[in-house]
Image 1 (cartoon, rainbow, N blue to C red):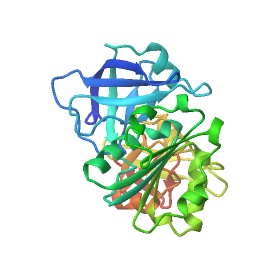
Image 2 (cartoon, rainbow, N blue to C red):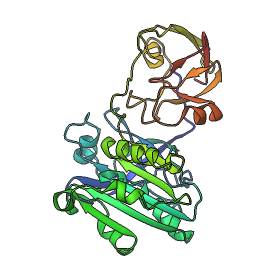
Image 3 (tube, rainbow, N blue to C red):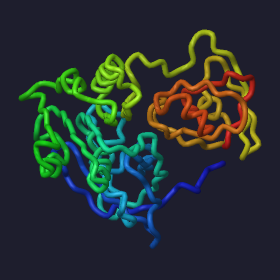
Image 4 (spheres, rainbow, N blue to C red):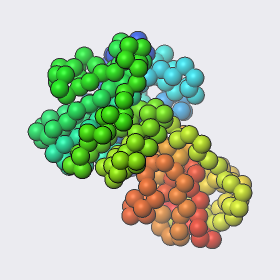
Length: 323
């Protein structure tokens, strides 16, 4: 079985902390006495759970800490089991494997930022705010949640003061007035947003209507509404050659690349199967991909020569992938 080990790291759960009633923070340390891979704000890791499930979590500790990683996990009552496994079974001393870090949500250099977070979407904002503070940039955070007590890390964030952080608890104040908020934003402000799909869709629409789309950076924890995640009518079959393994597979009109790989001994990392998490991103060595994911714009994939194989297809009869 082909498996890429170069970005896999064995870690131990050093500690767990209940951040809220439904959010637990894990501090992870490497099993070997070596520094963890460096990362920048916006990065996430793949956490391989003992059950075999793989889930993506934003790194929310300090990028300057080479000894530990921190992730915060919201228990999802209607999820697919990953968050429940984290909450119910992981204890200090549990050994895990992680992959990454990877970063599809990088913090670009700017003198001014607007951060908009909804719920657990605050986690990638924490190291961004640390970096903005370190760089003496002007920044504000609008932090929405169902209740004040449900909002992870709120006490820590409020220490920056009311001119920096505005909590908006839905049970008290409703939802943030995005129109009023974004009407005050100039062309010198980079806008970062992470949270539920409804929030992201609303922010995207407001930014588009106000000419701010080029300043907006978002990260999704779920596929956008009305996203088509599988093959559609009119799709054609194509061939995929896997360079590392020497295997060639045929991808049917009604299959994804991941579907076609199930009949081989080639292991490709994956998780969401809906094109939003980035776990199955691979390098493209030949051919013309048809990008259908919400991880990154097609132009960014083309520049990096990568694609997301759980939803992406091919515009050419043949693709060559680095697997």
